[in-house]
Length: 433
Image 1 (cartoon, rainbow, N blue to C red):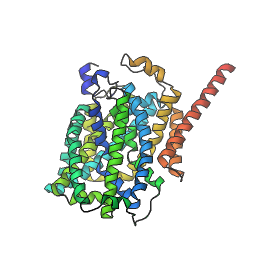
Image 2: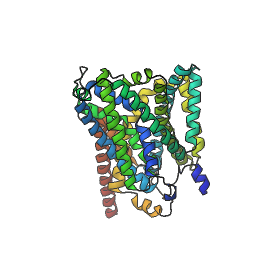
Image 3: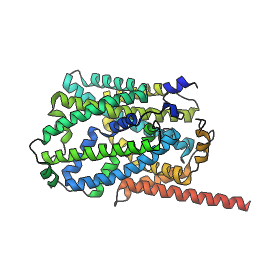
Image 4: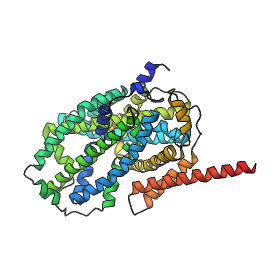
């Protein structure tokens, strides 16, 4: 495969070479755009409607610790190896078949969310221009698909335009809504609605972006070094979690409601519509981009043939657009949320395998200088799949603590223990024979 083909295909099935890495500003803006969404404002408003300012920020801090741990660990691995999440999973315990399973889950989940977010934008466009929901969904879906087909460079340029405009619009709306209120009084406000525990608050903070944390290598593979990954993840947490949540919490206290986003967008005229458009553009292009990378890994893993990411993007974008046009995705929301519960254990297994057990690190290290991939990998990582299932079960059924954190810890220890036991059994058998 020649260099031009690799660039057109955005290195979906190969390492991103150092010559193709981009600046810290570019990757950070793409990442910030993916986390600073209207859904994040809804999350912050939910905290503010059920907690004091101090409690809500503590919950934000605890949830953000989990997100930072996963994002930094996987992000550094992605930058070091130049690989996307689903491709990296092949050499992080899951093997070829295991990475296919992960890729299918990622592709289905993110394509589903692409369709849902496209439908949200279409409703706003239809409300503003009265051209019909179906036409609005079709136009916006096609636009997103064309944008993502051009790869990471298109995402970078879009983020440079959309992220600053989004914060200007949100800032102006927030100032208007908070006008006449004392910030000190809002911070001391005690909500009268049903109380939320710190653990529950931390859970929704961590759960709100856990899929994005797992997908960090898709973006960080364009970082020039591990230091850039560190700054990228810290800046994104500070802006996307602490800044956005604090603003949403204060607005929720000022209006005494958790329905902050509806008020922000519906009472601000064209500025509200612009906010919805910018918010959707920033997250939806990343959803479709990561989904196309995952599908490229799936198709190559099944057929042993390298499918072009651009055409896979067109297929996924078309599917997501059609589903949003016919409204069927409303039925899948619960299923997509359930898929999100599966992702934290995957991150735990990958982190343990890459940094602790280092089962394939010698192969990755040996091929890094030549910018190739290891020729061999295990067919399926049974230990990894078992540990993930155990982590999901634990996360769903253990009632104390933070479910996302519980599932990661259970999966990590289960994977480490089963691999160590398996290694001891293998050594014993070799000694016997």
